[in-house]
Amino acid sequence: MARKNREKLTAALFILPSFAGIMVFYVIPYVLCFVQSLFVGNRFVGLENYVGLFSNYTFTLALKNTAVFTVIAIPLLMTVSFLIALFLCSFEKINTFFRSSILVPVVVPVSSLIVVWQVLFEDNGAVNGLLSSLGLGTVEFFNSWLSMAVVILVYVWKYCGFCVILFTAGLASISEAYIESARLDGAGAFKIVTKIKIPNITPTIFFVFLMALIYSFKIYREVFALFGDYPNENVYFIQNFVNNNYYNLNYPRLSAAAIVLSAFIVVLLWVFFRFEKKRNYPG
Amino acid sequence: MAKIKKPIKYIGLVLIAAVFLFPLIFMLASSFMSSSEISRALNFMDESFKKVKLIPDMFSAEQYYQVFFRRPEYLQRFWNSVIITLPTTLIQVVVSAMAAFAFAKLRFPLRDKLFFVYIILLILPIQVTLVPNYIVLDKLGLLNTFASVILPGAFSAFGICLLRQSITYISDSSIEAARMDGASYFMIFTRIILPQIRGGLVTLTLLTFIDSWNNIEQPMIYFSDTAMYPLSVSISDIAQNDFGVVYACGVMFLIPPILIYMYGEKDIKSPFTSADKL
Image (tube, rainbow over the protein chains, first blue to last red):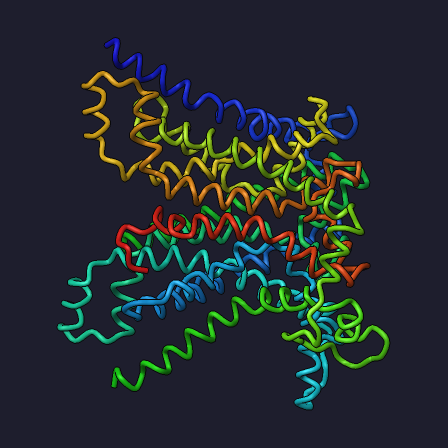
């Protein structure tokens, strides 16, 4: 009995620092934020801030862009890194140099690379130089729908390596004998991937998805670095909206935006959980 | 057939490595060009296209000389980054390791429910917590201090999830045996758990360090004094106004994360790999 209590006490002591921090910097702020979103000044207005938010053009634009980015970039990142992982796994032995090189973009700080992207993608940039020398004419990467493509490209490039590491770890854990027996039963390479490898790394896929989602919200750093405070309307994300409203000190609207964004994420996760459940237990 | 495929596969491998390494090589090469060579390559004057040059005409340390000896403000920014990043990383690793141990190996009521709450918090992005945090930091009087960026960054649920994952691989029997020998939980934590999750600790240190080193959002909003901005915020200004030193600044900025990465390179994969294959 005494031992059980001791264990509980220890657990409490070990958790206390993180619990205190998370209460002060996550939970309490969140509650305050929700309360504030229901007021204008000291007047209770119910959902008025939320209604105002959705009739605000810049907010709906930011929400739309964020959604477009999430829906395209995350599956793209997962597919590309899965394919690279499959490719790397097909080697029996790989030089450490190659393994490390794919992790380099994760390590290299965002700000260090801005110049590189600018030289490549500016109106007079190297990519346009290449296009025009091929006689294809130039495009405006920084002022058209291509801005979104650039942001997605940078995102996939940057986080691909980390996801590849996670996928290779998952793929390595599938037993060779299992794959071998499928091969003997006449399964082709494609069938082995879709019917054996993918179902067997479902937990890894879920973890990669979580990481991809978390990282997708950090893309603002690249957007800020590339396009500054007021990017063109193709890449005006929620974070831009939040930052710009800070400078106007519009707290009620900001609080409402924060709550809406969390709801957006929870819905996204819910869809994913549903999807995962269906695949695991068909019927 | 496998024999014909092999060279093609190696070419593919080299191409992949080149794609991921290209910007780094480009930046390193450019940092050794003189500012006049850079402005020629970047062509500000006429309308012709910028060139990607990977080999400087003449090796020059001019940029580094400027950054280290002529423009102390960039070193100051660098120092701000250090002041923010080191405590954030240290606190996060210690706090996460403690909590992860409790979540993974100790039994207490509501354990799994509490962990679920942690996971939900882990997923919430900075955009969501930025505003609420601002309100609390304002009430605590911490705005415009380094603590306003350090403290929220130090408490993240991410580290707890990662380390808990590593700790669950440690067998219960070794802990049980130590208990029988009369070891306290604290001793179990320091003597048994910590040495075995080295890989997890190194990974977390690296990821926290990079994340905090790259932090742009919080300093921009919580600091009204621009002299406190870390290099991550300043460098995008430099990129717009001061092409002469931007590559050297970029290289300077990425040295600390690269050093840590090189130090922990062996360990970083182990929390995710059971077999040493990859």
